[in-house]
Image (cartoon, rainbow over all chains, first blue to last red; front, side):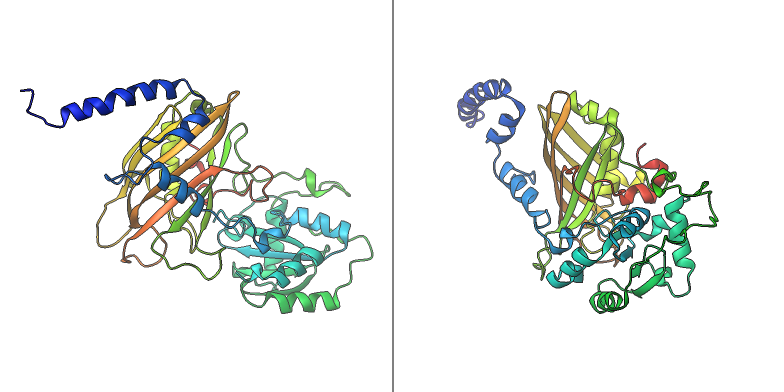
Length: 105
Length: 299
């Protein structure tokens, strides 16, 4: 029945421009696809991640760009440190941790 | 961490040669690096027997000072070392004169650079592959006192053939599983965790037109004790000239995925991935998952 689903005409109206838009997007380079994808730029009501939430979390789950301890030129090899200590005449500071200090622990 | 204090960082940056090692891997290395580490450890004065330590030595391997907890009294120790320090004036005694593990310096004057590297415990990032920065955050946690806190840092290695598959528009199964098993964890307060293969109950991950989407279920969601996670993901992969130029991904969900209390209240957690900067000093640091699972990691 044509009136069995009152949302159908609305969906058709929504789908036609969407399909046209997707055709355009399909011809764009990858970066443009990512940047211009506005179909779901919100927190998904079904729990999916929308583009806005993606961008926010991707930015938020990131260490500060400037940290004092990262201004130190850390070496990851004691032998390399010994070689530099010989050349520079400086003492060595060795920090040992369970889980790497530089962040892969 | 105290190492973030400007005065202490300045002291280390200008007066010392700083080196950071992962105790569990360093102590097992069967090469010159591991041999030297074990020699230092064997010195009764050296407290590297406890893995969290800050130790000072000179280029001859002479111990100059130490503290057990590098987050504690590092600065007074360093200042004390500097007061008494005199750089060795003569050619140093070889640190590894009588190697106990391997023949480190077969000829007089051999430099450390030519020593073999134990690739089991100190592997290099896969040639032709990718290094991806993989961070995590507990979204329910109070804002940390310092901006550097609250973010767990880790990494993900991608094999050459997997990178090539990404270029062709396919997200390889091996990479999906590695990402799930070794990077879906909140390591903002400590070491990362590793899931067993059998814990991966759902892993739907699609790459279509450069867009990554999917869902993931690890462990048994809702169970009263033990680790579990249920989440969703969105990301973007871009390539140029046959090279992956973007690997941005976010996984967000809920679960019990932090080390510590086995019955802790589940939390909302997010993981964020991006290509690592090859010039970053942590670029070739081994993923903890590699050290935990060895041969399984790059399988």
